[in-house]
Image (cartoon, rainbow, N blue to C red; front, side):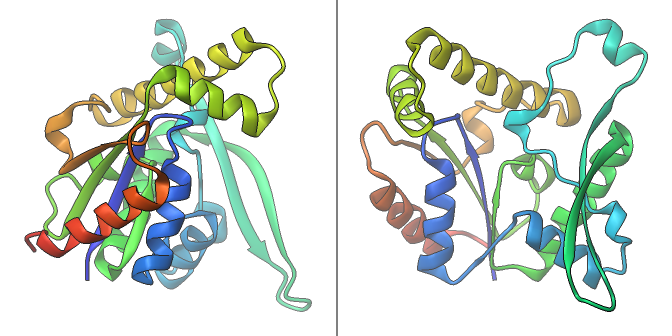
Length: 215
């Protein structure tokens, strides 16, 4: 059993590559649903299941950090009679957020055969055996072009600002919660430029690299 963590620049295709890897390898995807499942198996309350993707992290100033702040919280609950599931949104203290997410990632790691996209996976599991750490990048202008097409931006400058903001949020998330530079090449086994490789090829390269991972 192994685990793959994927860190990606916004618009680089990391999400699609992670999904394709799950298909190729038969791995589970560490998304909101799996987080809820892992929490349930671990006996955690549904209201302890949180999710705050790093590219949507809010970059805060010094005084915001000094006086404390809240982060996004999402939890899934199930009606015991009807079986219907609902997702609620609230706020959570950042220290509890980090602790709970670390626990969920650690449990997923122990189960194995999972792809963890973002969420500080490369930092949380940095020193763990049997984990392949991947970084997905692409030239900035190429990423802006992709995002503009996918999200139908009509203003090129707005698209550029949007991508810059998501990149800044991702970098700040890792620096704030884990004291890690997200584009430090020494914390990854492999960095792939999707400006040169398409998503399918990138997924195949990663799947092949997994064969050589030392446990």
